[in-house]
Image (cartoon, rainbow, N blue to C red; front, side):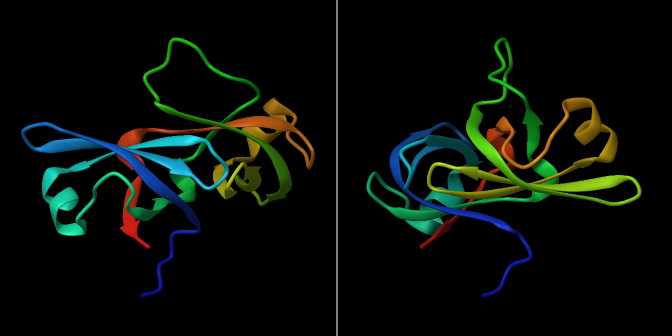
Length: 139
């Protein structure tokens, strides 16, 4: 199956915490960082997710925010430090490539944000992704 989601990072499930309808799944990316996904309990069962399962974490580029450093006092669970590899700007929007341990991410953010954050290749950044915006696929 082909997908339009550019951000597809491989990893291994380290834990599954279930609730009545939802579950949080912690995934150790191949680079060692931990990503949290909040998915339905039905999805956990359908995918057969257990500790040790190989998965791909999927995140749409529009769901990746960029900060110039770690952010405290924030409910966003996933803060992945990385380095900007490239910035492509258009009239209103920009595409920012970010290398993180274990993979590559693309963030679709406004051109104004790129300017305000002074983003360029080589910039140290933190990619922010809400757990509810991480989908999982079995590898």
